[in-house]
Length: 299
Ligand code: RIB
Image (cartoon, rainbow, N blue to C red; front, side, top):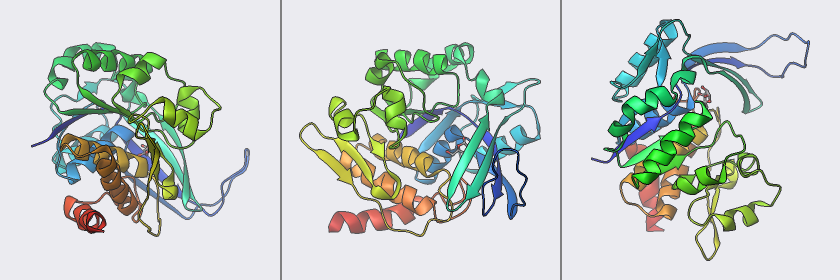
């Protein structure tokens, strides 16, 4: 079976639904509150696990109530948790999420995720070599990402980096990852550029994959800019759509599918994921994605 390691964050999401977003200094009344499992790393692990991947997560939790809940959620999803780093006297990461007008604003407090650092990765790095694909995001320290990407690159591993939350990245880091999946805002930040998307895509053929929500996904195949369309759905909550894309994309790549097919598969999974609340709430099972994927392929 295809195997995928996720090196990344695990958070408890604290979600508030509201009709209006408060201005600085203003207090408003919200409509609803819920807590649900999140963190870009955990979300991508769950997305991949539901699609049939053999998934192991490398990340950190505090020894608090949120940490225990996140651990049992990952176990329930069939994700291998034996490498999780438990940090004493540090809270598990949390994300405060405001859902308003079909969009979201997110503030992440990294907490234990800061301990998915070089010291931890030095201990587990050899384990990572047994996986077909390694997925990362950027809610853990950037030095840790640079360190482990260099190690995996030297060992010729397939690396998928979802550069969120975005910050300017070193050129060597971008060169060493196999695929990088920013959205239409993040690509400018990570490349530290004002160039338009097409120019940026042409610099990184078959590597830079820009997601654009309902506008689909773009990449340069070495000859043409390719747009892979999304499926049409009624979005309820877009939190975690990018994570579903990354997880699903990695599953398809680990199965040896082409870049175009892998993006199409991931677009379907991400499309379905936004039809329910919570970052992981709408992440689909394999049958649901295959049903649409097979129909699309037959056309
Ligand atoms: O991508 C969505 C995720 O971002 C949320 O689950 C939240 O935890 C933040 O990490």
